[in-house]
Amino acid sequence: MPSRRTVLAATAGVAASLAISGTAHANDKKLHSLISRMTLEEKVGQLFVMRVYGHSATAPDQTDIDANLKEIGVRTAAEMIARYRVGGIIYFTWAHNTRDPHQIADLSNGIQHASLRQPRGLPVLVSTDQEHGIVCRVGEPATLFPGAMAIGAGGARKDARTLGRIAGQELRAIGIRQNYSPVADVNVNPANPVIGVRSFGSEADAVAGLVAAEVAGYQGGGVAATAKHFPGHGDTAVDSHYGFPVITHTRELWEKLDAVPFRAAIRAGIDSIMTAHIQFPALDDSGDPATLSHPILTGILRGELGYDGVVVTDSLGMEGVRTKYGDDRVPVLALKAGVDQLLNPPSLDVAWNAVLKAVQDGELTEARLDESILRILRLKARLGLFEEPYVSHSGVTRTVGTPAHLAAADGIAERTTTLLVNERRLLPLNRRTHRKLLVVGADPASPSGTTGPPTGVLAAALTELGFTATALPTGTAPSAATVARAVAAAQDADAVIVGTYNITAAQKTLVEQLVATGRPVVAVAIRNPYDVAQLPAVPAYLAAYSWTDVELRAAARVIAGEAAPFGKLPVPVQRADDPAKVLYPVGYGLSYGR
Image 1 (cartoon, rainbow, N blue to C red):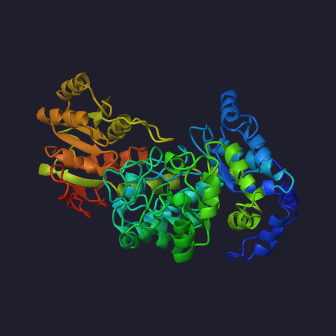
Image 2: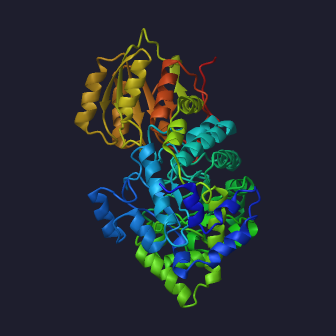
Image 3: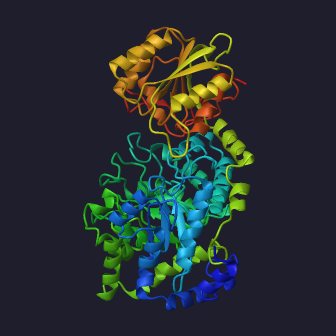
């Protein structure tokens, strides 16, 4: 790995003078000098943040080489950097970038070395989606925290700040300097298929406070936080990965609801904001997605909200941004709208050449590119990338997944579990009268880096707490035969724990038949808390907000009485038979009375 002295030389001698002074634009003169020496091709590359397959920058597995050749036309991350001079790279689990913390650190160092050895080489801004809860790219042994809606149930800004600080420190230690979190969307639609528990809740002010706290934590931990998805993705029944959502809020409602957390993030000094691939006619009636909207990004975000940080698109491979225009037009229109970073286009070659041609043809000016590159370089300077682009294995060992960090995550999780139903004080379960437990229910694919499946995690946690628990996975859509097996197994148990996941008719049948056995049934919503409305006969119901280990272990401690249920609903739960009426309001949550 090159020495620090090599790095300083590779960046044309400016690195030492780009030490962070605390003034956002203190180094602009030096950064302008860097930009003036860049070729047009290098400038175009600096705007892109791209995926790449493999655990290594230079020696990935053959299957990853094949995937890179097919999708990008290069073999490795190093080759992609040499050809396109990309300014950023995004890590994904499915791209095999995130096997373990030490491997990730080596990959990050390899990427930096590949970029800094180029003529006029610049450090790369490595990013990922580490929201915690159901969206994580870096798994165990890194510290994994409860997701946003769970944090909303806990309601403690201190916990949100602690989450951000610890997670930020661990990401920085493995070479990731930009995190696409927190989600600033206010989830007011229970049918939202893409946000849901990724949001802190349905109350704008509460969401804003937790967003600001998490931003302070992440950026205090040394990584750039990213508020998403502007101008607000919380009220849609369409997933923008697969369709083109339309938000029908009025401008007045947007001001009172969707805008509030983004304003709070900007006041907190947010480093970057991610756009949404949604139509928002009240803000721009052109029919363009917000990602491509000059009125929304330049008029409102830059102008009215006064934001001058980095604006990054959501993935340009998502259907919501590809519906109206071709992949060659999208990056050009995004830059014209006011975007700085172009994230993960389907074809880097198509997108890169489209931007280059737009400048050569005069549709985009080189000065316009320079504006975005200046913001990107400001961020890289603020994150210390010019001075210290590399990370160390000792830093990984010292920082990632430490006992103190893991204990902090468990403590935060304990303050999030929400008790919604507890007839005849069934909970906490008594180990003497309910020693033998059957754990059944949905076993969705485990979130990245957790041990899973959830029935197994719950059973193991309850066994450690003194019960004898047996796991019997029944899936998200159990068949009649599966239901019959679970009902038969329940006859031999003192109580049944059942996990529900965005409850389906088949799951509902399972729970109802378990209740009909006469055995005590404790249901745990392992994703959306709205499930409880479908199961009025269940004698005890907990909301865990996710099926990650840390949240399931916390739910187990609440079931066992080792922890009290402190969580309060951050969203309302409507009645199943009359969605216009609220069954459980925001702030609802039972306690054990101690």
